[in-house]
Length: 101
Ligand SMILES: [Zn+2]
Image (tube, rainbow, N blue to C red; front, side):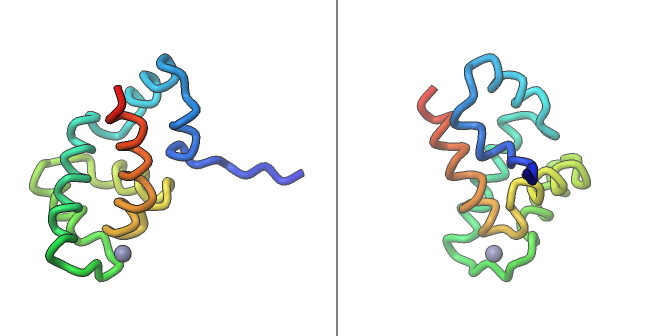
């Protein structure tokens, strides 16, 4: 049987409180920094079409001195290949999980 590596974001909803804490600790940036990135992208994409690159994510990471290589690798692993995918593949699930806390 083939073993597919599950995306972290897909298992996030099933995690217990402890697992979620470990998940947050393993992130390539602080949780609030990642949420600020989501907010920035949501704001940008309200008035701009995604050109299917990560230009706004890149802009935000540079402006905020985030660990660009690590964070963009994490986003890609979780399906966030471009700015709109970061929102549709990651931020929506993220908000469902963390906004209820
Ligand atoms: Zn896109």
